[in-house]
Length: 62
Image (tube, one colour):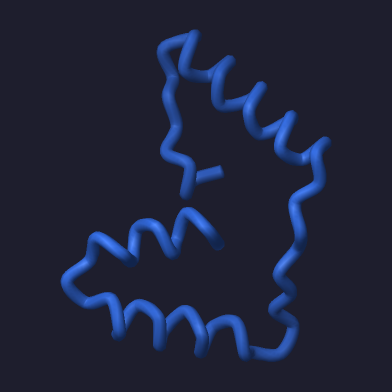
């Protein structure tokens, strides 16, 4: 969610992006999960390993 919001800040259509995101979040079955320290560690290891192997992956693809 933070990465989406950060991307929105640089967009020329910030308000439209915010509306679309809020509409998506309000749909039945959508749950926003909180990251734990374990989640953060797994994410950082995975992205670092991929980058070192020459296979960087965009964070929004994970």
